[in-house]
Length: 158
Image (cartoon, rainbow, N blue to C red):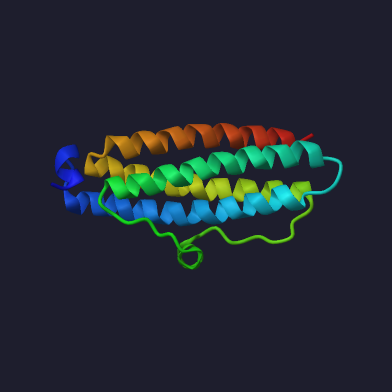
């Protein structure tokens, strides 16, 4: 028997959620790679603070990527796993050779803003499907990211 029968979601509604989650997965994968680049390449007087912060951030994003992919599987989909597919679908662009802390933080804030918008879309689609688990997951992400935006914005104003 299919997982959807046990978790009491219809295939058509689950497919809509899966589609939204696939978009989010692609965006998170590009964001993750950008964070790794910021971590590796950051220079200047804020190196120690930002190097450490970017590592915490990409570790968090790696967990989210796994959660999103597993949710796609739970809902009967197959998560994209090729980076070339992520690049075609993602709204977040690759960033390369950023060494300046302020520039890296602007890229991070822009990416988080885009992710927040995508998560709100997923939340809406999941809510319409009666998929409370995905709704809760997106709510958790939004809570964390809104706080992170506040903290990064405060840090940027020093």
